[in-house]
Each structure stands twice: as C-alpha cells, then as structure tokens.
Length: 105
Image (cartoon, rainbow, N blue to C red; front, top):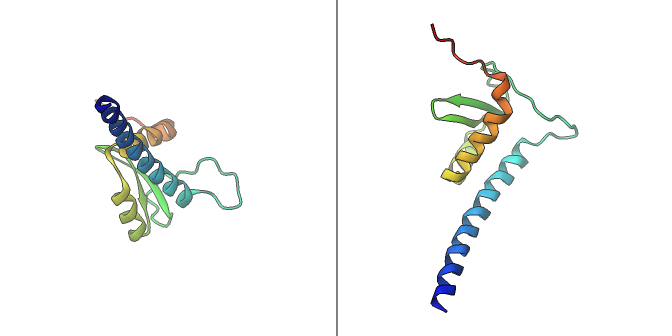
C-alpha cells in the first residue's frame, strides 16, 4: 500500500503543476483573445508600445510584454519554468517566419 500511496502522491503533485500551468495559459488566452473578430495572428516587429501586449525576443527566448504593469506582474508571478519553456516554444513557432536571422560576416 505504501507503494501505491507514493505513486499517488507523485501523480497528484504532477497534476497540480499541470493544473497551475493550464491556469497561466488560460489567463494569457483570456487577456489576448480577439473581441468580435477571428484574427488569428497579429504581430508588429516595430517597437510600437501602444499595443496592449507585445511578443518580445531576448537572449533567453520569447516572452509576452503587457502594456499594463499590474497585468505583467500577475503573469510573471504565475509563470513556472514549465510554462516559460512552453510559451517560448509556442511563440518561437508562431513568429519564426517573421524573424530575420542575424547576418554573420
């Protein structure tokens, strides 16, 4: 029975992490969803700061930058390493064709 309880505890811990990650993604989806339209992807490679959320690329990968400081703080607080990795992968796939690789001479 102790083997069962150990496995159950490990599974419960994993489930909690996954539920928390899902909560972060649901929060981001609600913040960034299009209202009254079916826009699939909008991006601006300029540094226009008037957009409520921007996708930024830095040395560690991609991230979402929210115009509202309270929203940005809430998202940062909710982020786990797993969510950061998944978000970076998703944003990288979505914006890969729009990013020019640096030219090496």
